[in-house]
Image 1 (cartoon, rainbow, N blue to C red):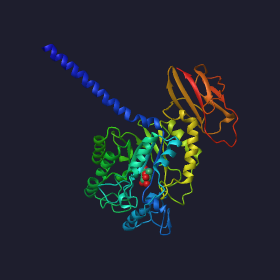
Image 2 (cartoon, rainbow, N blue to C red):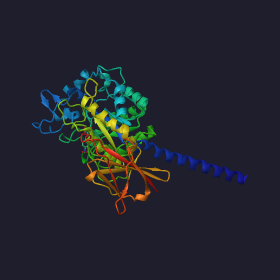
Image 3 (cartoon, helix red, strand yellow):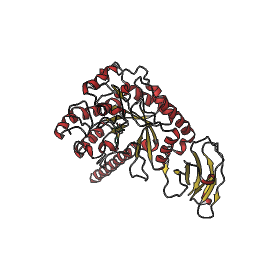
Image 4 (cartoon, rainbow, N blue to C red):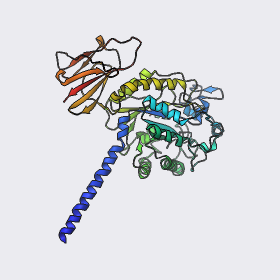
Amino acid sequence: MKRFFSMILVLLGLYYSVIAQEVSRKEVEKINWFKEARFGMFVHWGLYSILGGTYNGRTMPDTALANGKSWYAEWIQQRLEIPNNEYQALVEKFNPSRFNADEWIKEAKNAGMKYFVITAKHHDGFALWDSNVSNYDIAATPLRGRDILGELVDACKKYGLKYGFYYSHWQDWEHPNGAIPYWKPARKSRDFEKYWKEKSLPQVQELIERYDPDLLWFDTWDEEAKELITPARRDELIHLVRKLSSKCLINGRIAMHDPGNEIDFLEMMDNAYPKQLLDKPWQTPATMNHTWAWHSKDFNWKSSGQMLRYLVSNASKGGNYLLNIGPKPDGTLPLPAIRRLREMGAWMLTHGEAVYATQPLRDVPTNKGVVLTHKRIEGGQIIYAHILDELPDNTLKLAIAKDKIQNCQLVETGEMRNVKSDGNKGVTISLPEKDPYDNAIRVLKLYVKE
Ligand code: JFZ
């Protein structure tokens, strides 16, 4: 009998250790897609898109106003001091008759993007889904009856993209107790609690229960959020997300001033590119021009070559690139944005293997203007050298011993290149002459033995 019980105990012990392993394996796995994805689409779309950066004859930035120095068109209500009732009346005008979720997500897919994040609610407080918690939502617009977030989620599933929502959990300019910009009288924590319990937490719950997102993108910046987004509130929100979803990732901007240890990945500042490797997975949210939301007079478009260089440099440091689009009020994507997506997608089509699911490579000196990624394979590794700038003598230098390199080729064409010892501990590889008008990033692929 005794033996029987100890057998049972041993079996139970085994069972629970297997379960525990299973749980921690899941924890690790849920971030894996993010670590491999490298490239995602961000979308800022809401009532502000209707105005496109201009209201009543004033265009952003408008330096005649004390706080008017911003291009961010989604901030128009505050930057151009539009009264609440006037701004909120925009709900009547939100009628994107040409919106087609399939077309958006197909563009993202063809650009080589692996995930999609849209502003479910930005600082203005307007919800892009039919919310039970607030009437300031899509159901108050001519689009009532349509579930545009649902349509986007379905398209993401169809094209195999992960998806998530930007949710402004701190700033909310509609709820009387939500946070407002620093140049206005600050909300008291006691009052903010009402907004927190009445709108912020319940809407996050709605988003998870209705759409089952792969990530939530919360937003704060610096010390300004400290008084209202306390560690207790931060943890309350994290626990809510964890309770409702076993897969949903949480970004560091949930409390930029003090993200704690429970978040899943770090969010850089806007258009900020770290120089060093980081401990946690991370991404840079980036704009194609100055603004996030549609701004009809922001012509400061970056080139696709420049943006690919940001993407590849981030990949070489283990980070992702979340590239933003501000769709127009009719629901279409701006043509300059589509052109850039397609150019980037064309490069990703031929060079994706050097970007997705690669890792940073430490301590291998090479030329300035060259970044490296690598992949482990049986018996060794593949190293990718991304050549971002012109090289002196059109020749790459790499500190890898020659006898370890099995072969070297250009990724796009497969053309083999000769590897020469540099007479020291490294090699040199000369590149073919290139068409002077071609500014694409060339990538060399090296098979390297252990
Ligand atoms: C925030 C938003 O205010 C903005 O509208 C946009 O959604 C962007 C993605 O995020 O803007 C920020 C947030 C953080 C910093 C700057 C702008 N920051 O930390 O420097």
